[in-house]
Length: 168
Image (cartoon, rainbow, N blue to C red):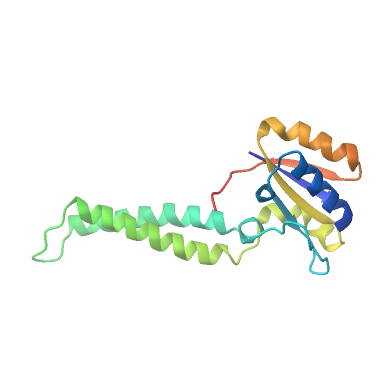
């Protein structure tokens, strides 16, 4: 998947682009709008916490690092068991699962309070009143989507990046 970042001059032109994209088969789930607090985005698919924060990134890292820490804790418990307790492979699995779960929850809480750093390059334009439309499309549809937007809205500023889809 690719993410197109489209800067639009106002809400009306953004609504037109969203309608055109939906007409061409792009789902509203793949359209996300970010604007300054002074903008009223009624009728537009506003970006959720998944797009505006580092929540997904935090969960991924938390599960990975927590799982590794839990596995190491399980190895330590098996190597140096408490007196009178015999531990086996189940301790390794339990440690890894507990660490991954705890790491995922803690990192999700931290990541949900940190803004999405991918949006930093657009912060000044958003603060000036421009509307940022994020469009997630398959790599094969990037050029056609860009052409559709530019044909009707040559004022749109489009940036394309690789985007990892996070299931919601």
